[in-house]
Image (cartoon, rainbow, N blue to C red):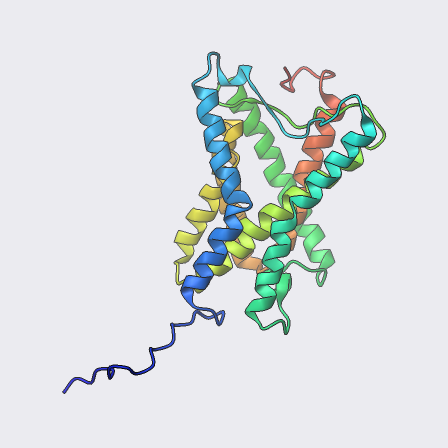
Length: 274
């Protein structure tokens, strides 16, 4: 004899995921975080790439500007714009920290659940440097090859004026990029997908494709290069259980790219410029 819930009885409580929240809430949190950060960036990059490929001229004849001046003739106003842009870009990371704290009833956790902390500085710095050296070198070779083949835009990592705050701002921008991307597209994304029952392979594919898509404004080479980087970073995160070495690696890669371009652009023949 099959038992059924009596009419008028209290509804069954929603099924909870391992994080203590119902799956619907976890999905909404993930979509909202992506919607105000890298998910929106992916949509903008896709639109930008569509515009680029439908514009006359090859990809290598067009530029992707990463750190440009907001007020070229007013250095203090320009500095204010740069600092506001960097700080507000980190608000989604603060949102992730809040959601992870709430997940445990504000009794602990937070970004430490993703391995974003200072508990293992030597490990994080050492392995971050190793990963940066490997990925940075191969990434530069891939970019130069893709640009020569006409599959990538000319990436201009910086076009700031020669003012005293130029390189400190470039370093801060590199750190902001690394914290935002690794906390969200690796740590938070994988945690939520794991809690929702996704397979490890499925989570890896989503993370890597998302990383590639929001870099699509750089061209085909930028897309595939960052997909490959995404696969490696997800594998390392699964192995270490920490995003901090990935943050260090990403920051070092971007610092070398931003500062190196500022020092070398127009002074060496092998670096593409417009």
